[in-house]
Amino acid sequence: MSGAGYSLVHVSVDYRPAPGTIPTEPGVYRFRDRDRRVIYVGKAKNLRNRLNSYFADETRLHERTRRMVNTARSVEWTVVGTEVEALQLEWTWIKEYDPRFNVMFRDDKSYPWLAVTVGDRFPRAQVMRGNRRKGVRYFGPFGSAWAIRQTLDLLTRVFPIRTCSDTEFKRCGRIGRPNLLADIGKCSAPCVGDISEADYRELVDGFCSFMSGDTAPVRRRLLDDMQAASESLDFEKAARLRDDLAALDKVLEQQVVVLADDVDCDVMAVADDELQAAVQVFHVRRGRIRGQRGWIIDKPEPVDLPGIVERFCTQFYGELGEVVPREVLVPALPEDAAAITDWLSESRGAKVGLRVPRRGDKRALAETVDKNAREALQRHKLKRAGDLTARSRALEELADALDLPEAPLRIECYDVSQSQGEDVVASMVVFEDGLPRKSEYRRFVVKGEQKDDLSSLRETLRRRLSKLEEQPAGSPLEEGDEPRTGFRYPPQLLVVDGGRPQVAAAEQVFAEMGVDTVNLAGLAKRLEEIWLPGEEYPVILSRTSEALYLMQRVRDEAHRFAISLHRSRRRKRMRRSALDGVPGLGESKRRALLRRFGSVKRVREADPADLEAVPGIGPKLAEAIRSHLRNPEDNAD
Image 1 (cartoon, rainbow, N blue to C red):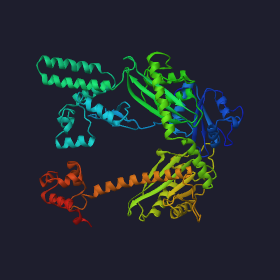
Image 2: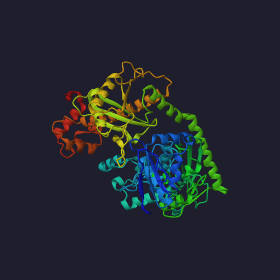
Image 3: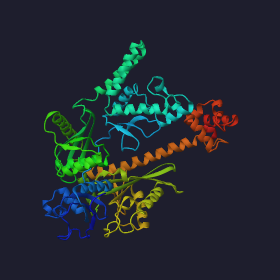
Image 4: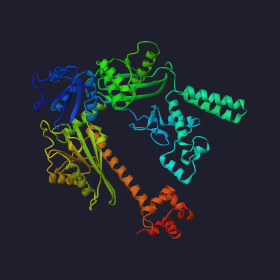
């Protein structure tokens, strides 16, 4: 990062900086908890004024700000040269640390995108969700995967690019025969060489240009070709081109024209209350609405409308990697509008306009987006009424019921899954502030000789607890120590799926490894009782208790996570073992068979002559394979 030299100041564990030690320059600050984990990142034009506001009269602080300040054990800051540098550094640290007290934009659902794998030799068009990948161009987002498939079904008439999976593409290449889409004219069959790589790339480029909004050249070319075919009396070709033109027009009809053809902008709206906010964005390209996207965000810090706009701009165009359009229309300008505009312009490589629409078509569109935001917030509140309050109440109830020194902000839960000692796996799920933190989930493959549930649980906990700092988890790290991350970051509560036996097994591991600062509990399925170490009777929570509901969610998530890995490994093992035990069939020949036929099922259905066509497979071995696959019981040990 360019700019003035940065100076990093660490504050002692007594926490509040001494008067006069905080600089008055612009900068970025971080609050850390007792384990040196960053829990909040902020920026300020004047660091001294901003940080002193956190240490004012506690009764004047917002409840969530007070909670953050009390959770923290230290604060540090970095001085920068300009507000733009502060903005860049704040976004970098939020992305790196994912602080739990910062406002974070996460989709209220996973939106599907029409994606083209332009980095491949023969690109494929498909539906994609989740994080963006390199070498892929994205168009959308669409309201549903069905809408994407309908669009592809129409456009592949004009741009017959492949939509098949890589496995199907390779299979067709091996057998020298394309799939059905090529027969009906919706694929140019690059898998069998029916089109050259250069011509196929031209098709892909035309498809991407059309999806980007450059539709006029394609329509013009189809009209000219249709006219030429009609004049040459090739009416069959003219009819086909007419249908292609109709397909294009149908796709265009689905994209509503709202602004002039030369307008590229994103239109943002916010509807919020004290605890949450709904954010909606319409993507307008070449005057047409190309996509719509929405978020529901919690507000762990008090933030006003300009503040939400600022966080949206930095996270959406920074962390989420969205392409910055020529203009971003917002409901209110952020406090540092000039700095954000400069940052957006730098990201785009050209000037970007950040403004509030006041009149005309853009104002009317902004009102439509605002209406969508208000409706989204209303739907969310009806769906999850009191959710943030319920989570806080659940953590407090859990601390009271289990006699914990503080609310367990980080909970880890473990479960073991197996089938009679085969494919034994265990899961670790993490909940922070009552919400799953999936980036920190872990899976364990148990490989010891004893594979019953208790020994597997003990092995899993040994592997996990061995990663903790040698220093007791409850004591703060000293200045200059590395912060705890990942496995080194200790939970306030460790939960095992099970009752007294599972808790006793976990307690044994705690004693072996000298862990005495992590609270332990087990949740038994039968009566949903909570077992604690050394206790003769379980803790029984009310069936309507928020704490019990949270424990159930944590336990069920651990079970789901473990069983999914177990089933995956079992399927792989069963697929591998289907060809095991055939005399004379080694690993290389098994791979050759699967490459040739694609699956064990097709190997089983193959004729002897087809089996013998595989290199290394003779008549005798072909017969042995057929016998083994058709009579698996006779070949069992």
